[in-house]
Image (cartoon, rainbow, N blue to C red; front, side, top):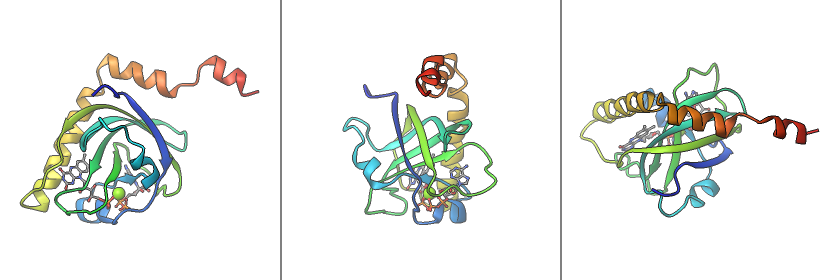
Length: 154
Ligand SMILES: Cc1cc2nc3c(=O)[nH]c(=O)nc-3n(C[C@H](O)[C@H](O)[C@H](O)COP(=O)(O)O)c2cc1C
Ligand SMILES: Nc1ncnc2c1ncn2[C@@H]1O[C@H](COP(=O)(O)OP(=O)(O)O)[C@@H](O)[C@H]1O
Ligand SMILES: [Mg+2]
């Protein structure tokens, strides 16, 4: 996928409210405008990368892009589960992400438990792969303001 790493940001919108309630895995959903602007060669599927809410701390994340075949959604969604415990919801805040790597295609499952188990595996894989020096460096390059940026802000 030649467009990775891919950086994007958008205000967190409401989805179907299933992530936290049914799966125990909340996902911050991007607005349609961001989903529509995805480069053509970013296929549907499960990805990992870094995320920051409202310009705050940078955390590992897993992202699902597509139609959630288990739920047979008719609208394409792009949603990030951030691997961090937040004190409260952050609907309306700006979510910045950099998508770095692909994990697997989206698929349907025979049970909710199997979907949840697959997502937990994705989280483990993301945790592991993001520890590599290459991805740590990308995190620093993308999110850490350089001295120039700070000076230009004056
Ligand atoms: C890492 C990850 C992997 C996912 N994999 C699948 C999948 O293989 N099939 C699927 O139907 N949905 C998958 N989902 C999407 C969930 O079904 C979706 O996040 C959930 O329905 C919550 O949606 P909501 O934000 O609209 O409430 C995945 C989500 C995440 C975060
Ligand atoms: N670790 C987290 N990752 C993603 N979203 C989180 C996290 N912790 C809390 N949230 C909040 O939970 C919301 C997503 O919950 P979810 O059940 O998927 O609802 P929705 O269907 O509206 O997206 C996010 O928009 C965010 O405000
Ligand atoms: Mg969600």
